Length: 334
Length: 267
Image 1 (spheres, chains in turn orange, purple):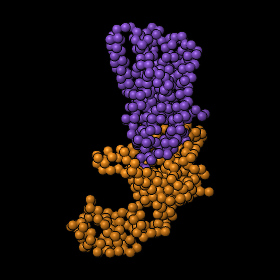
Image 2 (cartoon, helix red, strand yellow):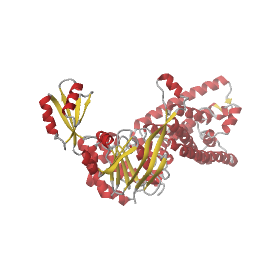
Image 3 (cartoon, chains in turn purple, cyan):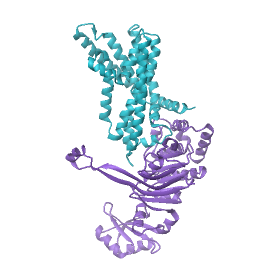
Image 4 (cartoon, one colour):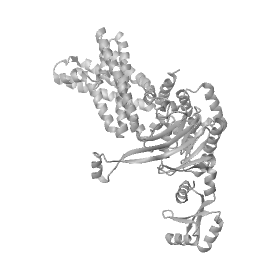
């Protein structure tokens, strides 16, 4: 049986229509002018025990809202959610025993206390037995160098150390499901790698189901076999990452900076490569060319560009989530 | 075993408050300044009244009452409204809601460590000083036991009221004004700033039917009563217990009904 089962779930919020300026704000004091915003629109999915699912979408797509419904904090407007066989918002406290959460920008640890005290507290709150606790701690010790962190107050930790600690805290009571909401946000490359390895190892060791939301395709590549993409509350994609890669794996974004007027040059490059989409970032004066390597190699494109333009600077990027979504919109995948 | 998770929170609270040593010093000094103000204010009131006894209380009766009320306030005030409001505004409440424990209990027991510390470091010293300085104005007998019971009930009533006001923050998403209003109402109507004996008759009657007087007036009157009559003690504790249970039910129901309102910032 699926550990998470979501059927036709919709979540609507009522928000007050705010007006502009002082006068508008005063009017708003007495206004009953609400509009309904549909944050999540008819989503269905089913997730099996032990999966790592990448849950992607741009900011405001409805990712966090879905997660809050799965954890039981929010009640869906319509539709059905079953987590571990029960309805989360009706059994929030019981459900909490089976899930762990990490919200990248917030910490569940006790700010003023050393990490070990937070762990001991969680041990008592989740009623973890001594032997389970010991075996979890020794597992942690084998995975990361946790010793120097244990006696450090959380408020003195760096963001990376804190995120690492938060992830360990979320897994401590051996939950069936762990929700990771942008765990690698704001971290440097080496810390990101460390955290990915940790998540991967814990998933493998404990068969924990992991739902991961992120904007970083690197996270997805390293961890997820399956991804779900939503935008504007609607589900766009739910399938293997391989399937998606076959569509987008050959795409690279080539960013260049050239002499001359930005707009004119962008147009010129677009004319030169009519097959690829060319766009200009006016703030940073980059021109990006989305190159499909099956049609033409990036290096070819670059050398061609160097013949016609004076290239001052260049960057090569993997396709980003935003571009994937844009592409899905334009072409459709499923 | 069931108590263990709560006591773990108490323990953490004690460790946590020990991390902020300086705040203790500041609190004791602030407390002292307030008491000096109270002393001179009431001295002036009694001087202008021209008699030794006002509303059935002598100057030293009033002072003892108010000093102990202040000590009790410092110990019982748990800033729960503030905490709930801030958790809602920052969105941290999501993490608290996802603990396998009722939020009401989580918040209370998280604060309980500070209770213990406040009791040991502000209430107890004040109590001892008052007892010594006034040479036995505080009777030492069975009344201490009644007082203890009464304070425990008072803490619960106070928390329920805080929790109800905190729940309002789910709707308003702002704290400051609501918190100030609550504080003024509770402190005034409970008899913490002015002894209830001084209230005009109509107000006294109204206050009598409100839960607030059970928070400060009830325990203090039990404490200062040298010759407790069983009937009076039972009535006082009975009324307190009634408010304790009904406010608890009300606060739980209100919270449960309001939780649907939650939108959680940053969603």
